[in-house]
Length: 338
Image 1 (tube, rainbow, N blue to C red):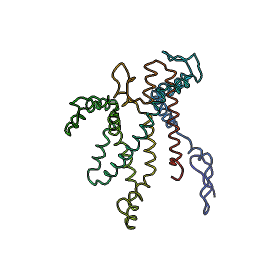
Image 2 (image 1 turned 180 degrees about the vertical axis):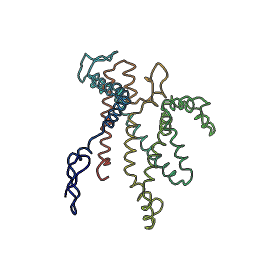
Image 3 (image 1 turned 90 degrees about the horizontal axis):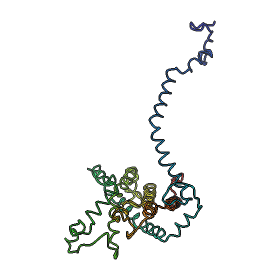
Image 4 (image 1 turned 60 degrees about the vertical axis):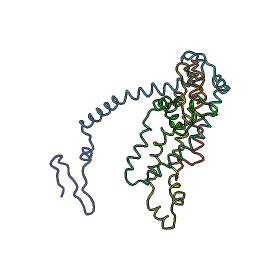
């Protein structure tokens, strides 16, 4: 016998053994219909999303991507005292920049600075992370204490180093500490033989960056399974053997990422070099050391040569991307299975 549903009077086949009851197509289609209220809620949600994100997206497109594209066009234009396009010169700005002795000297200086600051920052961050990781009580306090300098502005820290720590006066902190050991006052930022200004540059960057990379290493250390240490201890590994046999291999990916970030940050050095040696309206022309970004800033903002300045920005970008890709190639960063 067949039964009739009270709503549609459509016969429904009874369920057989092992088979579910067959429902009419109209009933299944009715279940799939989306209520009109839900559609209105979805549309209003999208409208609210667009209204909230539109200012950010418009600002990002206008002040970042459009600015980058305009700068790229300026690098092929004769733009002196203006940012208007029109007088195209092709690759002349790039040839002028690469033939500039001051720019080539700044590239050499940043390479030397990178080769010096990257290993020191890496070793200091890793050492602090190993020490803090061994602390059982108050680990969060130490982590926060070392991380606080990372939140300080490079400009504010540079002015603090310049006006208080290494101001060259007998009352400066560095000269005061040196006086306790019988040392004479030293003009740290003006001394070029020997180049004592590197002491201020290196200590400033270490103070600002070590805490941040220490937290990255600390996260990597806490992700290492304790079973590996227990198994190594059963084999008689202690101290240095645990460090070289378990800790450092397990920190490989973190170490590669930290090295990549350190290289990029070193090539982008600007704030501390500019603010430590800037003497006001005269700029940094008499600074004992200049990075490529400082040189390009003086070219664009001081000489008002925006074409050459824009060309230098893209040359430096290609250099940073090239060094990053080479590092990733040699270290295998991002390779599947790493």
